[in-house]
Image (cartoon, rainbow, N blue to C red; front, side, top):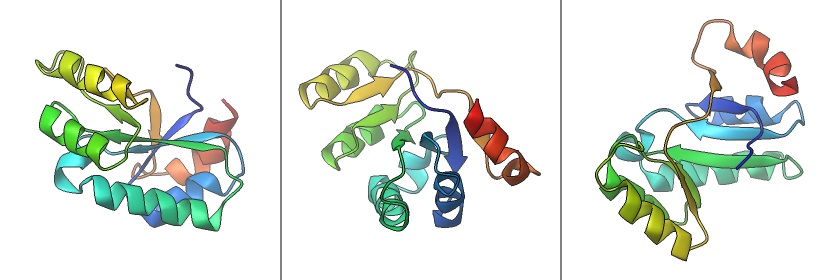
Length: 130
């Protein structure tokens, strides 16, 4: 699967900043966000950002770290693209369940610009160009 440049977002202001330039982007949660923030938070964050930028070409990826239970909950919650550590013992089972739903599980997060890093917003436009 080929993804647009990924940007790690930590809340709505980050997601809006990532979508604002109008370029294709992959919104990526922080590592393990499925566990500490939850799939409903992520789905609502993405929906709110898309409501402001409805024409944005964006995919969204929820990171589940090494927690297959959180990954299964994310699938039940409607998430169709997620990260689950490839060496996690439950990876194959989660990937199989995802495939039956038309979803996909990535074994590692794609390279990404983390908007929490100092100066990341200044680098955002260049990152999205590739």
